[in-house]
Image 1 (cartoon, rainbow, N blue to C red):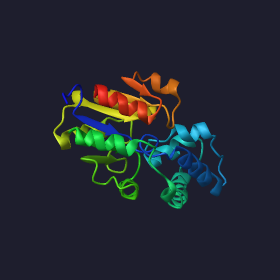
Image 2: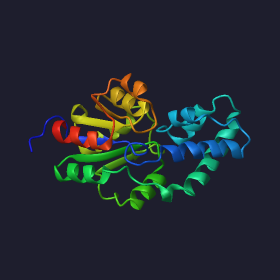
Image 3: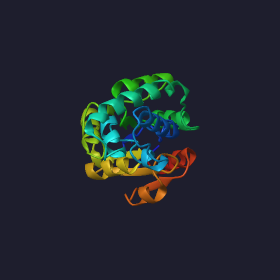
Image 4: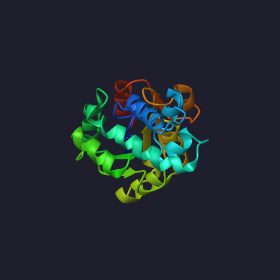
Amino acid sequence: MARKQFDLIVFDWDGTLMDSTSTIVKCIQAAARDLSLPIPRDDVAAHVIGLGLHEAMQAVLPEIDPSYYPRMVERYRYHFLSRDHELTLFPGVHDMLTELSQNGYFLAVATGKSRVGLNRAMNDVKLLSMFDATRCADETFSKPHPAMLQELTRELGQDMRRTVMIGDTSHDLLMANNAGASAIAVQYGAHPADQLAACNPLYSAVTVAELHQWLSENA
């Protein structure tokens, strides 16, 4: 197959490959409830998905005493660890990744998860060997800083202009814009379609099947 635009395809994890948005929202709210803090609305909690965990807690409850943030992180981790074994990939993700890998693309992940959390999640869904490189928020700057994409392209010897970032949040798309990479939005995750459209993605997929088809025909 003739290569069209990209050599490196970078995916966000939560809300893009893994169906975890509602679980993350519930765990953020449970952490706030544990500490008798204001409980963020669903849309407010969903908006911070994709950020590093400490940045997410600061963004979701910006008015509280900063001493609460480490405790929010600890309570969030407690709740998420009790539920993450229930999480699954979106239908069609495994087939899409397998096809892309077989067609010779470099595949990578750039996520707001911790290294321990990503490795555990990838192992649970048997994707550890699928990706050529991964970057987590506890290893570098949080999205939308371009560092994750800069480090991935450098590690894999790839050109940023032939790299595309795929994600369900404006944090993902803005990171791509900041790095000089292309961006593709998926509308089945944490951020509403209008927020994604404001970041001017190359394409916006409503379903995994649409994303798979677009990549097969255009990537």
